[in-house]
Image (tube, rainbow, N blue to C red; front, top):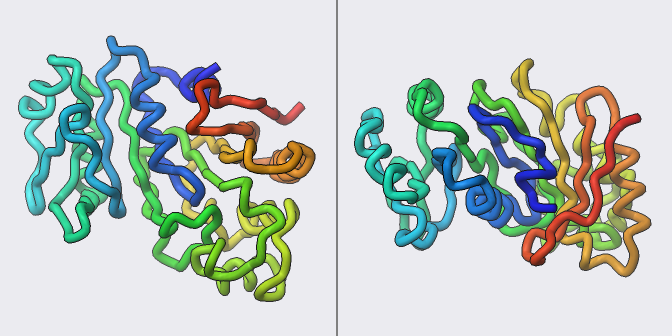
Length: 252
């Protein structure tokens, strides 16, 4: 099974990726897995590295709306365009505004919009400030990504982006060992990542890099702690593997 099948997506979905531990890898993997007869656009409300432009041509517009015909020309030849506002130092792209996103979301010839809506500085876990993440209001599926390889590591800046925020929200001591309960308390906290969730949005958690754990026991424990009111599905995953889906856990 691939990521597209595991997410059980339908046409006209807007999928936003947040959290840490492999968001960009999962987003581009999903873009490649969506059947070719669908039109797919990639974008971000934060910053991402410039993708390989032969496969994901980049279109930039800083202050204006994107032209549908310009995007459609790439879609008609089987390319997946990446929409951003401008090029930044370090081979990065600055994301688009929520106003630009709302305009694109209304285009009828787009079947899927994939958006990275968060940045974690390559850490597997992240604590969020008041203005984060920047989730587009039209999001239909929110994918919260956590690097399972953070389990058993220390709650510090080496493994956690904004570790002080995570400590405050979870009641943990800085430097303490991260357990499944730590991850669940963080994600489910009323002031956590889902506090800005649009009402129509389905939420899925992907525990990525499960193959890095000595056993899957703690990954399953994390999944069962997360299942509840807002989260009906947790996917155990290894995004870089040929067969990425290890298991899907749903609320009974």
